[in-house]
Image (cartoon, rainbow, N blue to C red; front, side, top):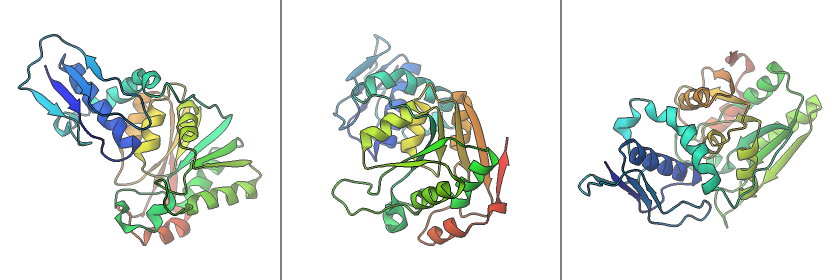
Length: 275
């Protein structure tokens, strides 16, 4: 039995949801207790989840880091529980944010700051532009497209539109598909990802991955499979929705300043659909 607590938040909303799931899962699997000692600016986290009566204060941990349960995670069991826990907690966590329905494809594009700020991290891999165009062509998608994005990653900072958003809009115009862009409305973005029936990831982003895993109505998702991040592929298969994989070959496995150019010119014959 474990007593595990969250005493501070690390990273953005996606990482915070990972903290919550990790702490909840460990407490539940050990018939222990999970407590949250800090308020969150977006989600409503219940203060206590109690799964047992006889708690051992010696076996006490904190969920202050995203990779709290590395040893348990290695068994891959956490993936089996991720979507179930997120869907169980979602009505509590997002009770103030209504789901938003969209009869089309919801595409999440992360803030464009990663193209200009080297400190953003080498793990924030973004798929090439040709991944989007090839996915629409291969899957013969004629639905309207909604791009959910933000041209700034934090409030009160300079806007950095993503080249991916601009290219998606341009491509949709070329093939006659209506494209809508929702920018800088965080609650709207959360609502659309929680309510989407069909979605597309354009790179590695914990924000959209965790929200889509929390969405029980998600019917299909399009995912770029790049060397460094196989996690999305595994977790969405376990979610139960239809997963469309597009392997991105001969592409960098770490994000750097030079990746922006490669993202735009990467050849379409290096992107392959795998059913």
